[in-house]
Image (tube, rainbow, N blue to C red; front, side, top):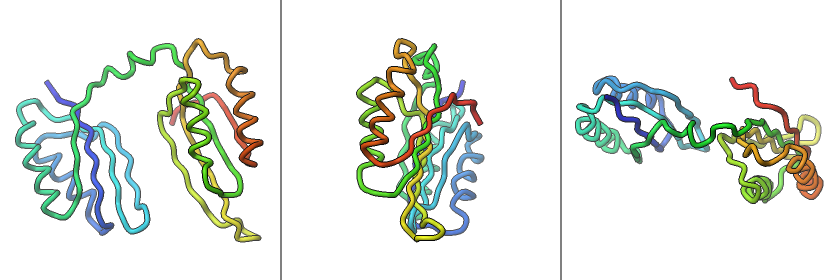
Length: 178
C-alpha cells in the first residue's frame, strides 16, 4: 500500500535541487506522480505529488528533514487520490488571458470564477515586454472545471464583461489535455 503525499519545497535557486529532492525520494522507494517546478526571481519552487510505500513513510519524514538541513523550506501533507470522484461530470475548459499588465487581473478573474463555483485546476501567469514598445504584456493560462449545472453561455458572456472591464482579451476553449 502506498501513501500519496504533496511535497512543497522552496529555496535559493542553485544547480542540483531536483537531484537532491529526487535522491531522497528514490532512497525511500518514492515515485513522482506529478510535479510543477519553476525559478521565481532568485528562488526555486517545487510542488510535487509523490507516492511512498506505507512502510517507508516514517523514514521519508527523516529524509525530508535532510532537505531542510540543506537550507530548503519543505512541507508535506498526506492526500488522497479520490479527487477525481469529487468532480465527476464537471467540464474542463482552458482560459487564456492576454493584455497590458496592471494590478488586479488575476484577482478579478479568480474572483469571477469563484463566485460561479468554477474550480481552478492550474494557472500559469507571466509578464514580458512587448517587442516594439517595451510595455509589459500579461499572459495567463488556466485550466478550470465547470459544474455540469452551469451552462457555458451563462458564464462565458459575463467573463467577456470582466475582460472589457480589465481591458484584456480572454479566450475560452474546451480543454484537450496535455
